[in-house]
Image (cartoon, rainbow, N blue to C red; front, side, top):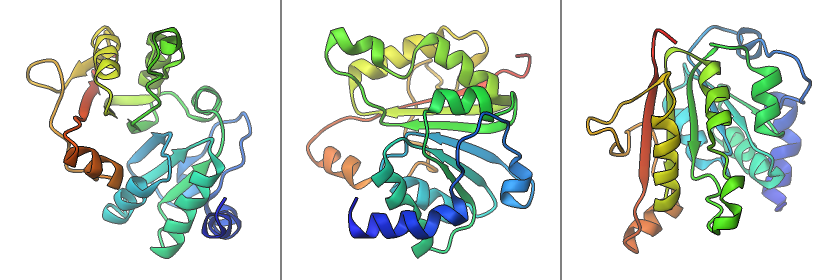
Length: 212
């Protein structure tokens, strides 16, 4: 970790870090109030999550990331901007979902630019698979939103196929494919650089059906 990332981790983790234990989280106790609950899986270096939390101080954000430098960078950013609506776990997302998140307790789940595993023989390692999608959906409240984004078109097509096949999800795109970037997802430096090079980004937005 860089010096800033280490300082962010050392100073921020006691404030906002959550050590993994296989028991359900009490969001109201964690944040000191009730509110909209958003889970972000794999936030990378965390800049967009920090921007979102700063823009929406009444929303409760839980970020899950296994990369410690990224966790340190996120915490450093939260300290710089004096944010109190972010909590962080440095652990495997599947175990967090299975053991720490109550069914129907989230209003939004977001996964931005997950590893696409470009090589065909590695495609099975992609995070977005039918079984994992069902786990995600089970943690959303009825009407809750699942928002994915990728800059790798074959992965976007894979995501679309998997999510369109989930009976409890409704695609928010009018044509049943992708949506323009929602305003609440900030542009990252990486994405802006990609746009200048002519690279595309695909956003997928789904809502959990109220009957699910």
